[in-house]
Amino acid sequence: MRIGFGARPAQAFALLEVLLALGLSSVMLLVLYSAQRHSQAVLVYSQQRHHANQLLSQVASQVWAYPQHYQLLTSELNASDARCLAGHHCAPTAMTQAWATYWHGHLLQQLPQATLTVACADTCSAGQRLTIKLQWQQTLVSATTSCPLEMACVSLHLTL
Image (cartoon, rainbow, N blue to C red; front, side):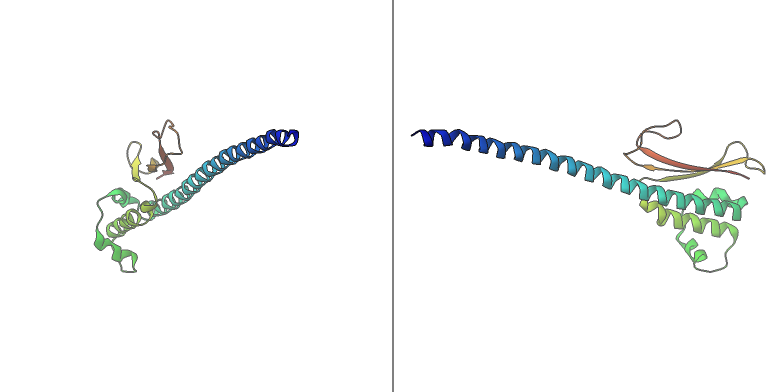
């Protein structure tokens, strides 16, 4: 009888070890899942920053190419302006609107609730500062003096 009685505590101890191992495994899987989700969110944010920088670079090149028409970069979109980007000869006004249509239709799709602003500090004349700002919704960022909570902001300052 003593042999059977001595075996039971060992079996209970083995069951306790298995339950403890399952509990720790569950916690580790939860930690790995959380890390994976955060890593995915950081990757998406990195891609959004890349698209935002690409957009700012294109906007800046258009401001230099058509300095009198930069206000049209944030104007109403016109589907017929797309022919200007297909190689047709267009006036500077139409070309600027074509770029605005392209940005709103393609690049801004990558940025949720994005807004593009192009404005001067005081007057838009030679030597003045032009600010191009792109802002979009992003939960990973915190508020700054120039950007509200959960909004990512990228800006570029040019001297006219």
